[in-house]
Amino acid sequence: MKETPKIDPALRRRLRQAEAKLRAAQLRLSRTERSILYWTRILAELRHERTRAVQPALWPEDEIKETKPN
Image (cartoon, rainbow, N blue to C red; front, side):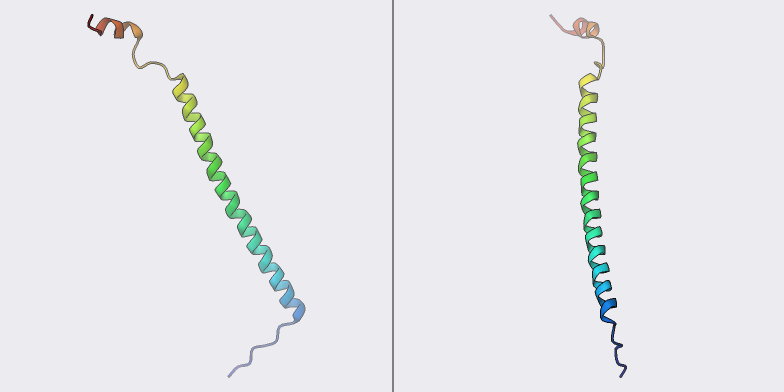
């Protein structure tokens, strides 16, 4: 049976600190990605609303008046 080698306490501390930093960075990354998705959706909705607000009529008003029965 092999014995597990003793890890230097300083190395173990640095390893724990590095793992903690990695977890914190991954958490920031996931929050940033969610924020990017959220604001991308908001921007798409606003652009769509702007397009709908200025979209011209599909046919001229004259033709609509001519085809309406009186």
